[in-house]
Image (cartoon, rainbow, N blue to C red; front, side, top):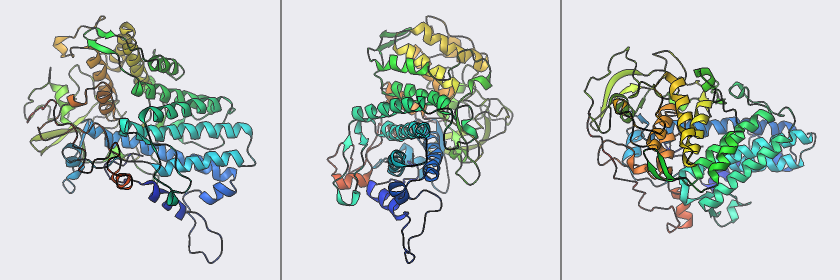
Length: 517
């Protein structure tokens, strides 16, 4: 779970101690109270039942939703996709752009719960072999998601994979290297894919409406492969020599071909021509009483970086003070494509902070209404067909198959909004302000299609060694391209540990400065 903005930095010791405190204790005189909102760890370890295991598996829907909403609401800020401006708490912005970082986030509670559930599946009575295989496939996929959530934030600093049996009487758990971490993630996904293939026609637990079409072992396998492909892309070594028409040399990293194979096993539909078809995929729902869509905050705005791309032919540029500030204007990017999965964005009153004016409030992901904003119960996309097509374009690009890459990009451009197709070989259209290279165009299409959905800008720019090129506004603003090991973990291990910064990680201070608008 991503808790960057709220600074909920979880230590292994405190996490497991809290978990243990919720355990049901025997004896009528015990002062311990049963956890009525979860599954007893003692019951899972000593006498697991199908009911308890299925309840635990179902509860992971909420944990997964927390990961996705964190990417949308927190990590998107670090890619300068959104601003969160709150007069009563300025740190929602200042801690993103200027304050040193002294900690990241490790989500050990969910990891520990999944390990407990996996062990319980091995010993529980009263479940069929197919039901157990379905649970293993679901649990291992979820475990891979939790590890990836931490791995992408801490990147080369690594994370802990294996938790000690007794955190109260153990040395700190080993922080594994980036290579070991990603190897575990892909192994878990492959094992889960195999389990799901032997799981029969239905899960033993219930999902919610957001998973319609992906709520059986067979259809969930497609989600597993979509995650595998996306994670392989994030891990793979990019091609080199990014010229106008494509890379001078394609990548020799086999991960690109592995990702291409996996994406062919998803629900990708290259023939999609409507918004409905492009939006096909699983969604996280936010039912009343079970959490909210964290992108719904009234103080969250589209970042000026995107407004500049909308109204300028090239960066950097200066936008007139009142440009686009009408209540009925349809504001789109520089070639008339709307932000993200949303059709439109509506202007709101000017808000000035540190000489930067922000005027566009986000709208609902899929609502065609000019005035609909993201509500607290709005669905959150996990992955959509539109993203799968763009991910395949990225794979083709890095394999040197630029014609295939351009074809996939044009499928989105043409069918997403009737935009002019890119030339093949790629030649930037000066009248549309298209970027100089095909790689820049690819990244541009991805960030405009998936605005604030999953930290696309932050992840992509770092992946291609371009994090320092994320446009920002003032020289004192910084870009935090990686999150250090949580400070409490560094106190236990010593600040000589890789990824620990006693004085705080200062981030990147160079890169383009857009100036006052």
